[in-house]
Length: 518
Image 1 (tube, helix red, strand yellow):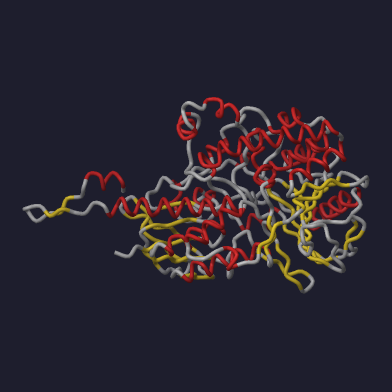
Image 2 (cartoon, helix red, strand yellow; image 1 turned 180 degrees about the vertical axis):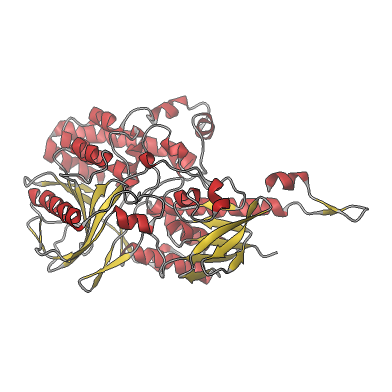
């Protein structure tokens, strides 16, 4: 019998699960409340051009190579992808900058030239430790289903590998451990920044997150058309295998029948029956009752103090001067601790670090000419549901951002043609989150094990997306979609294995195993 699978939301996780399930012959329908795919991957019109306003860094290409292969295509057949020779350019003031390169030997040389031989040696030791943590957790946790701490994770790693469990350093802060590798505070700050990739403070995250630096060191890739082109390719992949997409179709309620998810009721009142449902929305929206009272129990609520960072994001089309940018650029605050103290106090940072994606640059440092598409990001508290960012405050935040850039030598056109997205707008895009872009913050040793997993408390209802296991970021969202697709297929196969048996009295009796599964 053909199975019907509903996917709520066409973000990267939902697109990945829809493509994989459709390729296996399931009848998949994706319901997306907006008029385009991508979720956080989106474009914003500024000054007559479209500027990418979502994720910008594409890593772990092998995740997508495998996904496209499983669906009968290849990544290179669907989008144009090329490696960036410069991973990112970093600056603290006007006295030069530091590039990290795709070639680690060049990065080591650059660090040595920037901060001396001891710093280059520290980079080598840091790379070794980050690579080891990644190797330990790649298959056991990042690409596998959610696991608990410590015994289930130890079982996956290998009971005889006790040293590996200690080596991931879950009980020490990232900031502290970076001090073992780097005496220069600028380098400590540079590699601490990777905690913000999952929306967290380097002063509160475990040193385990050094693995993020290793992920980026394996390669950053540039996609012609940006992440929106990747989302469109995933949509085409699903459609070629029979997935249907219904845009402008919000879901009012997830229906529960016989103790399991049985279908959806749309905003227009239409009822859609389904054998399985994948929710590609932040789990907070389930727990908050946005998909109906019955679905509240699917997930635990995330307390506001456990939310990840939000952001202030300027999408712009403007001239720049002074600083020679690469594709990815970071301009650091002179007081990193105060920056995160401001955010913890529910205030935008007064003297922020600023990330700038110069979308016309080719990743090798080549200079662009004329106005260019820019995405400018400053970390902010996830208070979009409790605090109103007034016009005056938005102007203050813009001035603070421009001061940080100017301190490092980058001048922006004035007036500055832009659109500003604050935690208020992110809370509208991601309801019930306060604008937290990355789900639950990775603060404390247990945070990764408390993140919502693929399966929920309601049989037949699954989660996918950057706010679920294994974590934030485009490749992690795709992995979550793969995990959701596999869980759906396993569970449906398990249910089909047992059938009602006709008794002499004419009654049908459910298998005890089937009852337990449902």
